[in-house]
Length: 244
Image 1 (spheres, rainbow, N blue to C red):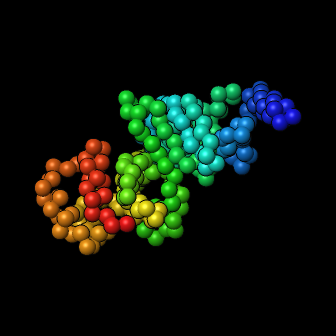
Image 2: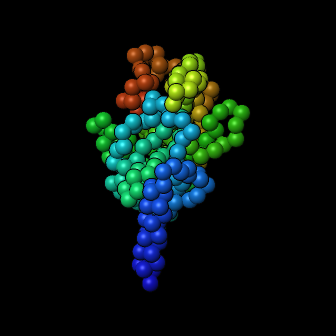
Image 3: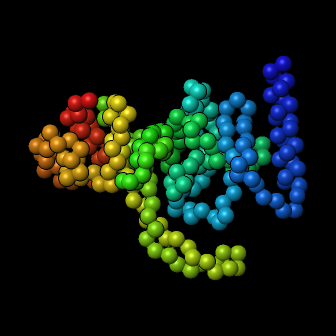
């Protein structure tokens, strides 16, 4: 009986997509939820204007796995992550439509092969995105997991605006600059966000470990936080001084 209900649901969904695609022009209601069987849930996505390609973590659709909040896993589906919106998109195969997935239903997602790297994971964490904001759920790229875990949120700022022509009309276009936020997550799930992983900021987070931190940076002046192996190296050191 359950399998028949699922089959009927799939047929009705396919008919709905065919009806939409057969119209000369149409718009989507982003409040209408789309469910894929018992697994993925989200909403049809259409942006008022094209998103700047620089704001995507992966500009092309890539195969990935998603671990859901209910413990299930959805594997080998095409996904794309937008860093500006902090949203994960799924290319629904039956309709070829873009679905913005419900963030609350996702624990983590993994790109099977990102430019030759098979270790790219993003995890949903609860953290403050801005100094005066309340905590919220974000997707952070997991750099290191331990007593102290390190995540990156690929945040953007608007550096300038310029005039551009969109569909024959002049409009202002934002020029973005990437300004990542680094999150240190403790075992109690408390997360501290830093815009710079430098000696001064880390000494403020670990006031009782100033001597060890100063010594680390003095002995490792060449460390580059824009280089992931160096970030892992730094996180490994922080795990030696964390007491929680």
